[in-house]
Image 1 (cartoon, rainbow, N blue to C red):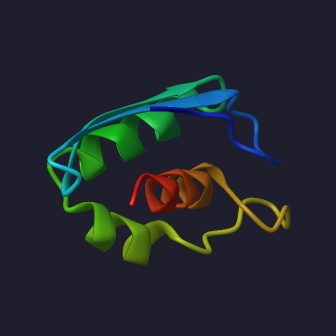
Image 2: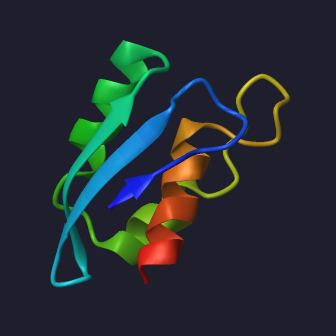
Length: 79
């Protein structure tokens, strides 16, 4: 899945899942490279529902959203 995030620096989030239950890989295009790589590594192998619970609602600089929050939104669309 390729998700187009809104309100953040990242332009795309590429997501691969396994059996609609686990995250195989996540790649952010654009945004803060170190943070994006860190998030991608942390969520790899996690259950989709657990990831949504941990990341949903995280704010970046008063934007009302963040790259982790946008990842949670993308994962909700997958479910």
